[in-house]
Length: 211
Picture 1: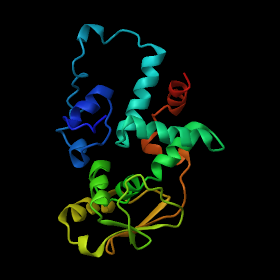
Picture 2: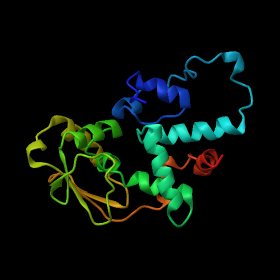
Picture 3: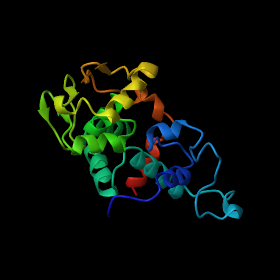
Picture 4: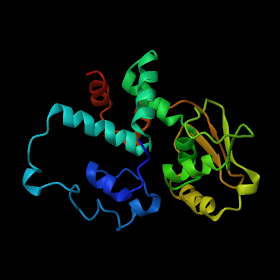
């Protein structure tokens, strides 16, 4: 399966939720969800039909997978890792997803979206503990320092993204020095800490893959 290259706003319309896939556009009046447009290709007459349990579980899985910008095969591998870990599988899944380098890069305000953060990582603009890492799925550990490579600190796209830090800071398990363009992953977050995704029902995802 190739990576989706179509209209990104169509994905949010399908899920009827802001997935924050286009950065600043998602916060503006141009967002398709703000315009209250329905799901694409769906007959308005059928929108009131009661969804099946399978459909509800599928939609929860698709929302989370698309938020983190992952293909199905990769997302399934992360779920299987979460399943092998001790503790609650759904919460483990969130922890693993939050530890992805592209996600941490986004959370540290070096990019306005996870897709933009993935590009920064893939093109070698991000370092972990002083060493370049170009693997978006790299698992960041507690105490790791994530920074923008010296040669990339002049990029306007990164400077523009860092403006968000002045408005809303970073999440509690992270710390950032915006002037030095480096941050630290202080601790692995708990599920309850990830408040911007509190509406995702991870138990539905566990049930989906358990069939």
